[in-house]
Length: 342
Image 1 (tube, rainbow, N blue to C red):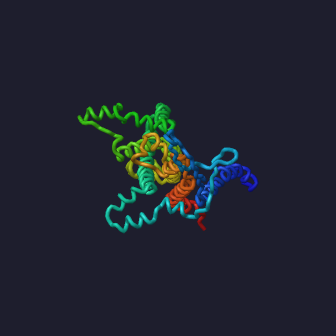
Image 2 (tube, rainbow, N blue to C red):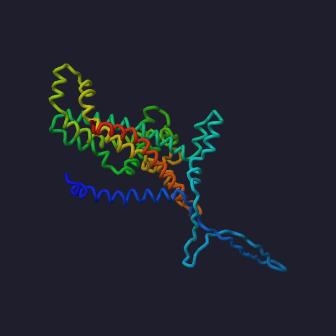
Image 3 (cartoon, rainbow, N blue to C red):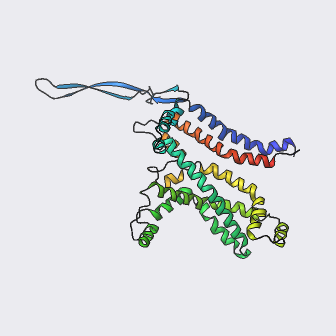
């Protein structure tokens, strides 16, 4: 392909990525080093109540946001350097937790960032093998059924992936909350009351189940398309050589699908590390929070109307760093597989 033709194809995508991804990232990175605060003014007000022989007066001192001539709240932005990251990571509290020796995780879980990091990593690393395994199992099962029923089976298998994440999470929540259908069924079977949303670990299990149920169809579609390109001559040769079904899967099918497995793993790692919909849909913020939810929480105005934009920016950048760290092993493997050999 001529260079001019190549750049004509990739140019629009590169421009869009620079405008909508690279530029906002640079802006957020710079914003994490600045702190914007509302400027308050001190107001003294004299209030009097009727009295004899003279009214009772007192001076009330209060603070209120300073307004400019257009009635807008005045803010002040100052450079704080790494102070925002320090407030988020709290290295002194981490050092004190490890110095104490016992109860390290209990102490760290009291810090929002590490509480969110623990759940995000657990959520990502547990759902990854389950999504890959379930997607591959469904693809192999669909590939083995007769051709006349494959269409309806594929349609039904894709339904969880079509449902909007928040709606799907709410649907699962309604099945298990309070007097939900499945909660009543489990209570009837066990003869005891069950409160699925009273403990953090049960909510976390439901969120893991929902993510695997929702994302596995994507892996299934990719793997099913890959199965159509498996060399049938190689499979028949393996059968003639006496290879079992498991051996054919291990030595022929999986190596052939490995590039697709790496692709699905990359997509899932990037997506699940930004877990957010499940925390909202399951109303789990009292028990479990993710890094993405922590950023959202910083952007939510507090009682005085202020938002911690600098902390939200720092949290976003640390989330990006976490995603890059998780992707490095897969990217290195891809580079080794496709690098030109002399």
